[in-house]
Image (cartoon, rainbow, N blue to C red):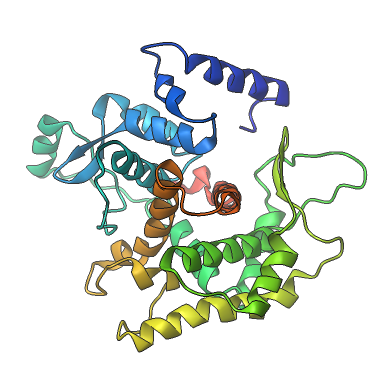
Length: 329
């Protein structure tokens, strides 16, 4: 949380840790976990914000304002995936449908009935009502070899909205392009693992060089260490080949050309409506990883660390692209 100092973040963490021992406290549910971590916090937060209605997650109306505040920092889909993963842990309900609407509903029946009558309310948004970040992210995760990523990185860094984490001499802030490329590699590795696909030997070498070093977490957030002077562009073609291999498998299985390789095992038909289809693969990947971490733990610990790094990179880039000045007139 960048609005707090390292000392304040440490005190907040200590408060949450102590609160898990207090009966009736909102964080008390985490006391059964073997240690406090970000996935436990996501699970508890999601269960406080959502309930189930007609087999879909809806926001508890009394927590709607808090939900909107939280989604400034954590995307809606991640919270919903955490909620469904928590339900799988609690009652063994495995989620199979990932084609939910972009806009999260609420459980205020009376208000919904009023809105269903039809209201003439005319206004328009600039950028604010479009799911632009989700589309940009899926595009980058599937086309790491294109020049669009470098252009996006340069454009975003010119109008940097996030405060830099370190001011020490000799420290160089990592480019957005480098972070996104690492996220793309982490994502394809997790998808390979979830779908039970085999990695080639040369791909393992690429992973080892880019991701084998420790994920360092401290007051300044996280950073995946890379070899000094490493040119990330040399890995673009190799990562692109890894995800193109999954798309080739989809063609062989008669699934057609996928807009996102993660859709291979999402069980969603292309007849599904627009964004509900496009984002199902990302949702499935996040849900399966969260559900595994919360319950079975069939993956090795390194995958959960990579997934955490992936989420931090994604939320960091998302925050860069949220432009409140252009959200409406």
